[in-house]
Length: 173
Image 1: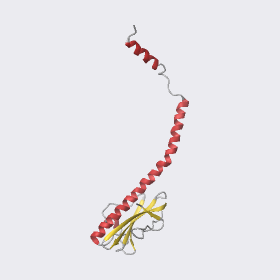
Image 2: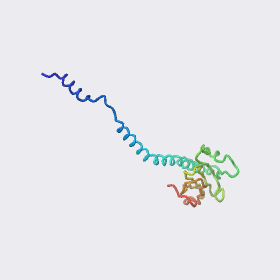
Image 3: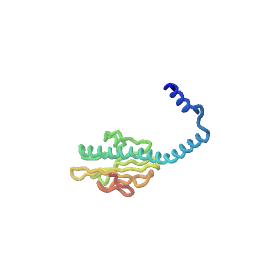
Image 4: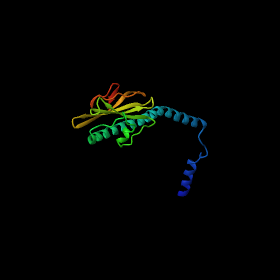
């Protein structure tokens, strides 16, 4: 009669018969080639995502500047602009500062009482520029956020009103 312990030992012995063998050089090369191909496919996608992440900085900051300008206008009946004030954006109290990727500014549109353009000019040719605008309509203010159609370090056109971006840019919904 065969004991259960003998059956287990026999099965264990058969399954571990080649336990001292490893991977061959060919198998390792195939694995390395597969990893290389996968990384070559993934790299462009990864680089595109980093550009989008940098651009989200500008979208967020210009949107924050628009909201702060609306609040400032409600309290002071005027907008904050860079014309004679080097710390104009600092007056908004939102902590937006120039970065490695973007330079921020606020400039009057037509007349300081009519509107203000908040801009993020790209510091890198791979990034798009952004412009926001806040416009007064009687007691109300309206805002718009625009993105340059092309990448580059050029200045983004100011929005013409709360519904239209300047030339070379499109409205962000």
